[in-house]
Length: 341
Image (cartoon, rainbow, N blue to C red; front, side, top):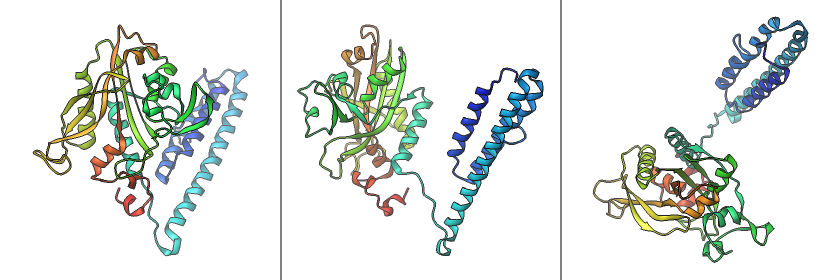
């Protein structure tokens, strides 16, 4: 207690107010009250400890703690009032109870992915939706001549420079180099990034100009393709609630070498069905071992370290998980669809 300063008290108050803003129901509000204002809460404990401080500090800290308690009490009363008004509106509109909203199917899928990936040692990172061509293309070994950089494929935005234009990010792969540089990460490291991406696509049942993607990156001295198979088999087995196995097919991507497409055993059948077209396998997406040039952009010694990376569509995962056959429904805002989840 004697080490506490007024600045630290201010931080506790700030954290409490930030936490209060996230409270969504009466149960959460009560938990907040117990944590910060209850008999064993943070603020009362501070007040009880004031008497143990040196006399020169006692008055200042006591005054600050009392002021913090008063402010938090007022904030609590205001939050309780607002929650009461919301509850009243929900139950009194035309005498009928209003339904409470719930998470979107894509959000549910992302939350599940976050739980699974953090559980196997990956750290979640984020990057900007408005990117530059250096991070979206150059750092991933996608040269100026690549068709993905054409305006017919990518949404360009005013700003930047002729050599480093602004774009709506075309994949979460743009997070790879940016996150490693900003975190000053040193191998071994394992990161993942789920998020929204944009491409100039013609919208149909399988394509959309706005979608979500999952990026995984694992780098170390002895990371292998076997590690990659283990990770995706764990991810999808947990996500779909059924043991799945993966197979890899050779492919080409400029940011990985070797590159491959990954398939999973069909989660709907054992010997062939309409979804897997009778093959027993479902295509998931592309991956590979990180290209040495991409590692060097991360300031990682490509002679010593290696790793795998993958980018998978989250809508594709949700479509498989929930049995949806048209990607457009995720953004149509049709309540008949949204209420099913």
